[in-house]
Length: 265
Ligand code: COA
Image (cartoon, rainbow, N blue to C red; front, side):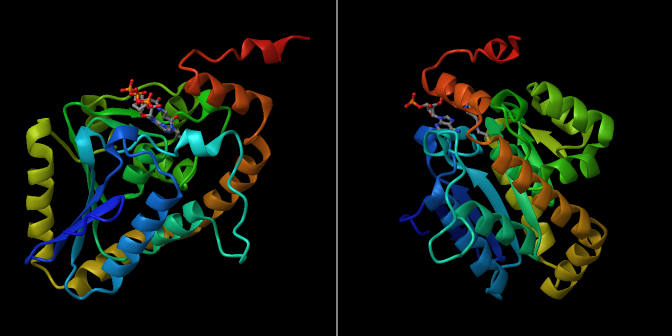
């Protein structure tokens, strides 16, 4: 196992790579080093013939609380000076370019990017403690990681709109009932059950797994690309807006945001 990263990696002899998001004190919130580490993990796993399946999970009983709001401070990270995409964009490229099965074992918090990353995975198994949320309306923002498309594709337009507009919490039962997760397990079993399913998958030829993933995804490719462009444009418009700054400041100050101040005539 490599310990020097915010994504721990452990490859077993069956070809299952366990990737663990590892910033437990921040509920595995994504700052640039964690985006970079996940991108590198997926890029290497894609090329490594010893890897058939990746299982993504989070350390400390939580999956991820999404984008690190302390680094976000109401603004999108500036483009890299060398013209390369941001750490976030590069990682989302790696997620959607990953051409082998990606399973997610999700316990505890799966919020924002933590939720949309799970939705971008191929199979999701959840633990009883799941607390899932798409907190974009309440942050004065819009969806990311193509979830404006992938969520609708997974659960339908009505339910996706309800979750996006209300930013309501989703528990394990509801996640399974809506089709956001394949199955629910007790927390202490969800990772083992996911690894077991991953080993079942990993027994088959990688060429077949790649072919299945490609054919299952082909109808969604255009939708994902279009959604990513629209999300970036809207995010650039809204990040740093007074409403977004109020939302992030309120989170940092551990208080409720006051959006009513923006409705005064
Ligand atoms: N960015 C930065 N810090 C975060 C974070 C995030 N997304 N999520 C959690 N943290 C930090 C908290 O500030 C806290 O830090 P502290 O110990 O220094 O005070 C620590 O992680 C533990 O989180 P806490 O809020 O105390 O845990 P909780 O169980 O009460 O609530 C959440 C967990 C995820 C519901 C809550 O932290 C939250 O709403 N986070 C923001 C989620 C979000 O909006 N993400 C962005 C999506 S784009």
